[in-house]
Length: 181
Image (cartoon, rainbow, N blue to C red; front, side, top):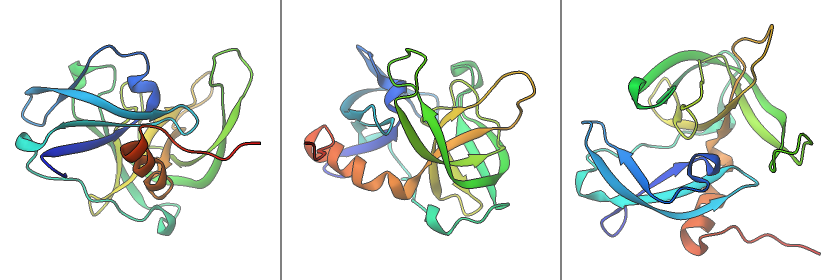
């Protein structure tokens, strides 16, 4: 929260192509949000709302010190607002996982993202939600899951420590500045 604004970290794919953004607060009320910036490569976005209705701000944990087997909770809206604010519990199943990502949906991997693996249920609609540790601190941003025949409990979150530089740039410049040749 800064200058009467509350910043919210979510996924790029959650806000991509949106003409209008709305945030549902814990009490069920809805407020208008604006996109500050978004980055397809890291699948991160920052949106902002007026802070007058924000009573508590989530605290970030340290995703670098997580241990495999540590309890985590995924928070989100699986399958949309019908299941708004759902929480699922699991463990950190793996750290430093590399998952191929197809950015332009052409069936070819364009990028490999480094993520935390969890068996906490992450379904469509959980994207952009928080993955929190047993202290309630955000240690990841839920982003994707693998699904298919014979696949269960393969959810992934962007480690919170890898988001801070990206989100700072999105807030400051509305984009991520990267070197290029």
